[in-house]
Length: 245
Length: 245
Image (cartoon, rainbow over all chains, first blue to last red; front, side, top):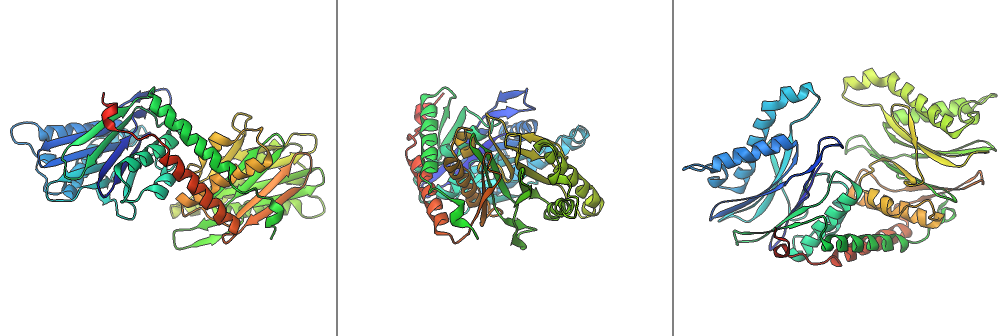
């Protein structure tokens, strides 16, 4: 599986993705699921993917193909971020349709989901969830995050902690706590983790990769687990006798 | 949906279940999903249910029917806990089969899952997950808990905290932290929460219900959230520049 998170804050955008892929439990590998496109000085995009790996790779190849050559199209020429989301959604449904029959014959599903974020000059930065059906939703100020893949394990901390007023440092910690919670609970999500941070109006991305053997990663996990266990211990003791109806 | 947890510890068993049911978002109600059966002095059972509400109610009625009358059968006469699990699994598949065609016509699914736990004199107490197909698994000493329903949101704290050596007070706190995490992240799980505690060899259950307006519940949730947020704040600050490959 996969877990990707994107957060939209007053000062910028934070993107975090795991890299684990699996086709059955005996075919586990590492693939990048966070991709950056800077096709012109007035625009920058981050695309995160979940779902059928072959489909997401073909969508990425189609995007690159449209950007190459003397007259780039696609992400190079869309006027608005929502046009970019629809463009990705259109490619995604085309690719899924191309392979639908052959995949259906073996009980497989070629669909994929994306998070597209970034900024086009003249517009506010934004993040969009592109559904396998090709339509999209944006994050809202009340719920300024989007998730794709294994979204349930790490949702609570996002619900509790993410506010659009959070600064980028805190938002990065929130995203990481959600990611390490998910990876600890579900083997199909795992490091390295790709991180990209965008500050509004900068038109450049700060990127990094947290490797599985990074000392910071084990420090994070140890501290996070210690807080969870302290949280359990500090709950009041419940005697059912006090709660008889 | 539903969330039910059962833990098997060295000193006994802990069962916790929510009570929220929904048929669409406009038909939300409260039904008990934790049921206690003491059909003879040498045996005690707790049955937790998830899935199609009509099916689980019919299974419960079939169990009660077998226990009534001058010659009780079913849970009153099974020789082993695993026989009880197979008995419940058999009823469950029969009920699902009875309604399969009519439910399939409207795209619905009549299947349900159960956790059956308890003790029969001469055997160790145990907990079993009964699948919709009628077969079962037990908890293990390495993973001494079972979940049914919305299992993902609250799995991490169970993974981290539950050991068969935990005492019943701590295990009850672990179960509650998993439950309140789930309910906070998913509207389809909610209070009142039914709690049942069994001490090995006692052949009686301690039962209680934590109501939505219980001061202990808001105290728990507040403390739990505070620990999670402190856990986020205490994560190290990550600068992507330190993690460039």
